[in-house]
Image: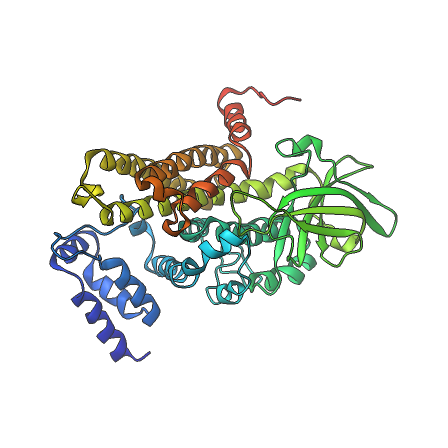
Length: 454
């Protein structure tokens, strides 16, 4: 785009902003720097920014504040480049994903066509160095997770499983040859990954009770057992499988390809949450995996835990996105829905619910922001990530419940989005460690005593 067109579009954008909005902007940012940033935006980014600044108003109503779940303006702590990326993801989710999610959620289908569209964003493997990855701060991985979950938690889960758990396992535990083979292709979404840890009989107790076994026969590893709830596994190209070595009793990781003999993935049906996610029951029946596909730096469950520690912060951000989507949807609804001759947003009880929702959301946002700052500083521990997972998943449950409350009967209809957030919040509450398990991790850290059953 020419410089002339950029400047022209910048002035068009500013012209669309009313004086109150301009005064507020002037108090918060350097307008000269803002002009430079705006001039660098492309047409799509400008269009999205204009959407944010404009508030749809009913004729005869006084001006209403914008619907924005970032009440403490944490987005202003991002750099201009980071903010541009956030807006690009938000615009993509609004334009490409929001129109199709309710239909696919209802039919429990994954919109495979979005993978090609996601490629253009270049947001896969955000915090990793090399292999074509963006190498951005963990903070941006969290911001992206929030923006995706703000529209749909299922799509955020698909992305987190692929970019976080699967790529993260290879990045942290793979050999250099394995990284070179898989990470560049996975970063470009040419190959899709999944992560197989949870089992039919073992969820919270995987550290000591993993039933899937592996045994080396001199040429190949032989894997036997089952994995359950494995997102993306029905169509993934590579699935990271964790199994216990029959000889050493240590947990090892394997890169299992969908064409490996003895590998079978069956789609799980009848879920009430994350219906777009294609969870699978995996059966490994004498599944043969060559030594070259064993994760060379995964030799105990401590290595598995490193992956979970890194990605658990992302799940906390995902919970924030779910809560923000529910809050913003509820606020929008209450300003349009009229009873007794005026919008229900003007009634005291509705406002009380909205303020309670915003209070929880703001507390969650500030917590995960600091969490990611600690992660970027190399200060993140298991208990830090676990506390965020506990708090955010609990508070999200409260936010979506209140969102459903203010919508009344419409709160159970997909067309208003809140029903989907209510259901999906239940999945967030359980995966990446239940509330009880994460509480025990934090409890051990603050008391010095382990309350885990041995």
